[in-house]
Image (cartoon, rainbow, N blue to C red):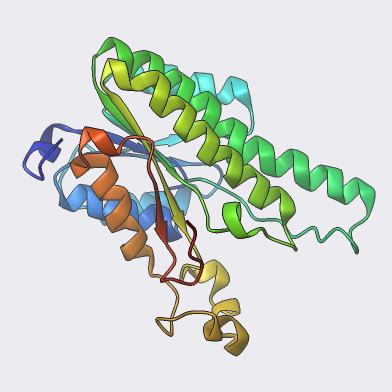
Length: 252
């Protein structure tokens, strides 16, 4: 278990750091004293803006398309050759709409390929790289941002739900495999989150009626749970999937 004081010695790689939940995670981890490596795919300007706003120093940017295995390997080699990575946060993800009854077959197959490559295979390949190094250094943590959709389904974006269900299974499989080497693995499963990308959707009265809190989660609330898993959660919690959905979906 790492206290907030220990965070000053922790280096964290956060994927999808250029906005929304990723930015909130970067900000909180930096406030707790961690050195942050911010990953982005294409929006360098947004990632640079996030980096400039972080407290502390030593933060850096890295670029890669996580849907491309060769770029994942290049990214990890680039980072690990110069510094130790203590925590990997798999946050990057996409949500393309592809409802089964109205989507053309070509668009359907493209959505599945793109979504699984980015949301599941990318984190799987990056976690593989991290696991090897963390096992050798006898310690580390992997935290993946999953989704409520992994449990309740996403009728308009089934590939997204499937990718997040796979991410949960990946996290629990890695937790079992890596626990003997002091590497702990967690998943955080938000429901709707108030990001710029979904600002209009979360004003829908039908959606809000499904939220016992009367609102959706904030990026900062998700970041708090990710930070807890990354720095504070006891070893015995490895393999846990933590819901952050305001009781909008309860599972047993």
